[in-house]
Length: 461
Image (tube, rainbow, N blue to C red; front, side, top):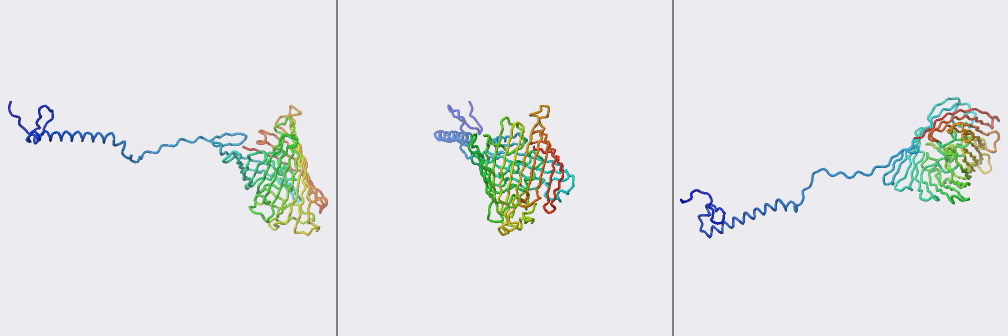
């Protein structure tokens, strides 16, 4: 066989490894050593490549990812429902809740709407359709079920009426902080949306202590026993809701003690819509005192007011803005309430003494003593006459105010009748009311009377 020619590698016999041509010119021992080095180098390079492709990515530091972050799991939804004419919302964990309700009163009145206190008031002649109340009420609890809150605003008479927190952990001791109605007589404490008549009686404006800013405690003791009582006590600034600060160093103090004489605590709501099978009744007494420039109150931007009637010597009560700390009020009331088998009955007697501290003791006008009372009775006649529709209620009320007991011929009276039709309890009702109102003038030694007609639709949702 002839000799091989060309520049290609030469295979070494018995090895299967091709020896490059330049190495073939070396002596045989040197060829074996160089070929071994080349084989080891190829093995090492292959192992390095395998390491880079498999093991290195798992141990190397990961590069930052620019992918979109994963979305968090959605929180549990809030619980929402409409119940008792309110929209109720509560978080899934039960820590927070809010109840929302609107209340509107659409009223027609002739020849006037307000309670007359003088002959000039009786002379008014006007027919009016108007929105008497347009209120937004919010309440619920926050953080814990026992920390309750309440807020109420009136759009028709723009003013923040209520804003308070109630610590309600135990029934025998609850604490109310903020701006709210003083727990006083039933006629004032009961919401205007749960009254039996179109509005409160002529007694209210003269004797109410209305809403105040302060702290109240209340509770029920000995429930179900003969000594079952509900108590209320409070300390207040004494200037109503329209004033942030007091006008002197004196505070208002008020208290109410109610005996639940038949073993059940009555709620603040008029008319026996629930048709109590067993009678529920209460007897209550209350007292309050205050020193300020106020002799009357109303929930308004200017809630600290002067009484609209003259004091005992015929002079007018001073404007509160010019009478800081001038008047001392001492007043009290007695109250009876009953609900049973469609009957709602109530009586209130009030006594109020206004002391003008700028007048010498014993001098005319130093002390003015006022008294007033109201008696109210309503009935659902369906309980007696089956053919009478269930939603129909009839009620009557008599009230009087004596604005100065030492002055003759100054009595003011009200005799009212009302027909109510309840579409959905107090949450939706229509009322037709007729009143005979009298005013006596001690200077003219005369008494005049007029008839007032009012029609109202009251709806809450």
